[in-house]
Image 1 (cartoon, rainbow over the protein chains, first blue to last red):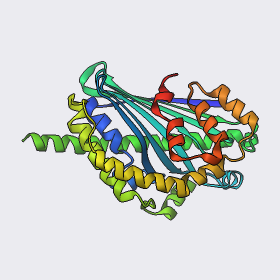
Image 2 (image 1 turned 135 degrees about the vertical axis):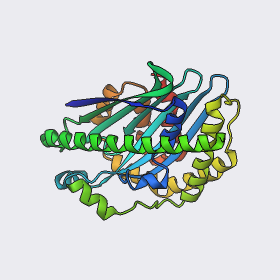
Image 3 (image 1 turned 90 degrees about the horizontal axis):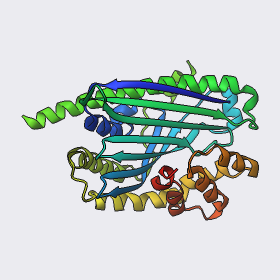
Image 4 (image 1 turned 30 degrees about the vertical axis):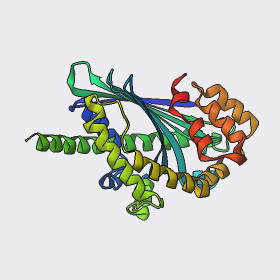
Length: 185
Length: 125
């Protein structure tokens, strides 16, 4: 019972700007209204490898995921903690984020991987974002008998949230673009 | 839709973390460093160290007091076969170290948590 979804999206902004926006995605107060399912984002760990230009970061993300009443009843909570690990390789220009839930693991495992790379058609100007989300309902969990419904819900929510995430990313990119041209003047 | 009504009920999600101010200070500093230095090839030294120290000190206190004890409640009932399951599913060493950390759960503290989920262990696989 694993469902996987992949999405691809092109930002018409350079890789440097898009990855800068990615860091701000959950943190800017203005975006909290749109991404209101994100309650807290804390940085737990960071490490810079000076010779290689690699930056490793671990963040804890607290998500509000109410779901339908029967899921709440079984799971007993509507808050989920996730851990996001990010590697930015400034030299080869890639950013990879992996997010997993660490609470509710006995019911469901969600893993989301996002990659930002320079777009092959326009490496200096555009960025390609590849996203893969895997949802796995634990076969022995109390949710298993309703797995279809739960997976459907999860999927709907993920699609909704990733569309919202793109919206926010586009807005921050525009903001950063304006800011950098302002600085250049 | 349920999702929408829940969101309205929730209202604007103002942070409840006591470290919110220190966190904002650190994240602002980090965002500036990332865009203006790291992205321009200046990756020889880390910045925002004092912001990081203050934020981390607050966070470790906070996680020990509340956050992680909640994690433990949520995870406390993990049975051994679920752990085996996790082990099989895990593509990398990451969840293995997470469940090792969980099995020593009574001594769960920030450092262990950080070690278990350290970016390094996640990306070795």
